Amino acid sequence: MSKLMIRKIVVAVIFAVLTPLIVASLMVSPLISVAISGEPLTTSNLFSAPGMPLFLLILALFGLIGSFLSAQLVPSRRRRYRSSGTVVEEDVEDGRERGVVKWFNVKKGFGFITWDQGEDVFVHFRSIRGQGHRSLTEGQRVKFNVVQGDKGPQAEDVSALR
Image (cartoon, rainbow, N blue to C red; front, side):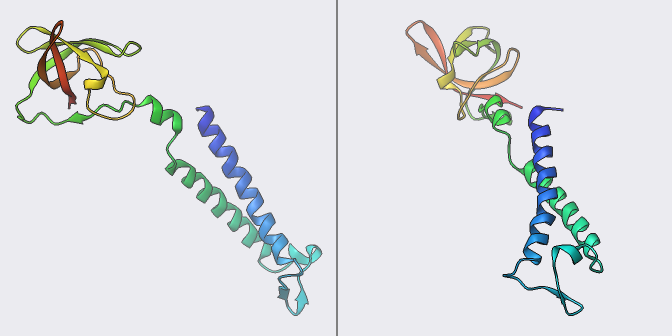
């Protein structure tokens, strides 16, 4: 289990414990006068009131479940940064060339694609479709446009294929 998941569980448990305590303290607050059987609710008779312990337990369970579920809906920052921003497309004919990634150095931001015609084509990370961290993996099928660079053919408008 990841540290992030443990942190989410701890926050959910704390929220589940605090929610009924806050509700109970509001119920006995002089600002909100709650009476049961004609008697004002106080801290001493709060838990002896009919159905109150069950109410607070259910409130705690709903707090736990709600907090945990909402934590699952929030994307993890780590996951967002680690995932590739490279566009992945279906292989439909659009006039672009096809090839396989020969190698790609993520740290340096460039690599080579072996064109289906057999020639190696240089690729820079700026030429990869997408946002954020764009990279390619060895053996990945890609499509691209070929332009003639200073040192030979260069791939532009690169996207990964499904």
